[in-house]
Length: 266
Image (cartoon, helix red, strand yellow):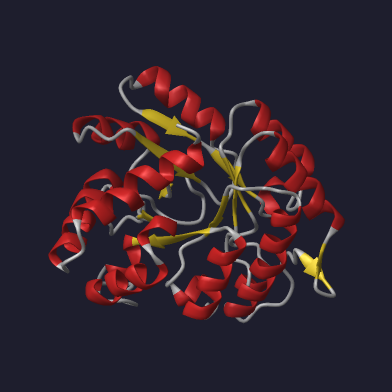
């Protein structure tokens, strides 16, 4: 549900999309979701499925400066091409800017209320049965966003890479549980267990997912970095690590198969 790939003008990536799809076929995966901080990945996904039969490849759009930020027209185009997921700002989010010691960035709400463009985007997501993902916005913004989505009866909501405090700006377990009560799924990424991140030991990650409840969790990788394993293989080994912590095969299956299928409408 969360794989980065080349080309990416800001950092080296482990593999291109065709290489990812090929490895996914070898491992008998059902599907992958391509993510870019800079462009709509839906056309790439469609092209890759033509080139590499045997695996479903899904795309989406992250609402960063490169696509015009909170741009309803870009979301509409993504939807009409078959895009499955819309991430709120990631690297262009004001909260992400503040984390890096910079000013500016994109806010999604003001005075505790979502901007009018955000509401317009939520309506497009709802009308096209897409997934709303929170991106790199602050937890307080996520709360405003998810409440607004709930009021519009939007059911497919995903809180992006929870547990990775550098990107979720200190999101607490209580906040995660609150987001679940609103109706969101919580995404946890294997990247937090990698040596260069090391923000959460495997056992701690497994314990946190159990506390939230696997039935409301999605386990992804966020892989694609040059120093990470190719994402499908990294996904396989990360699932093995979770099983080694004592997590049941049933719970892992819920997080990597059942819940993603519900969100993607498979």
